[in-house]
Image 1 (cartoon, rainbow, N blue to C red):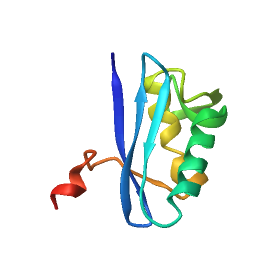
Image 2 (image 1 turned 180 degrees about the vertical axis):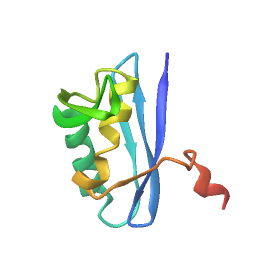
Image 3 (image 1 turned 30 degrees about the horizontal axis):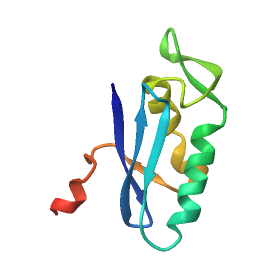
Image 4 (image 1 turned 90 degrees about the vertical axis):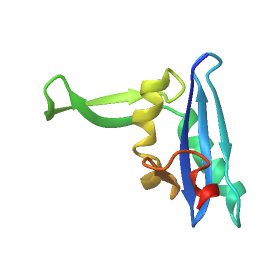
Length: 104
């Protein structure tokens, strides 16, 4: 079983989003004021098909328009997460391991 977990930041409140590649389940943990609405936005975004331009076979020299569903696999989940903040106002803290803020 493979799980991918990434730190989320919503208005200075940290949590995480986790994707289970085996069950295709997405778990979202966020706290603070407005967290319930933020979690709902994140869940909606990650469970609906997203059409986006992504690098093609030539890398950044050529982009392709594709429709992706985050729950397909771990790689697609990561790609869709790159558009999370623009669409939900919830930031992915790529360089912070989940739970890292607990040790500050």
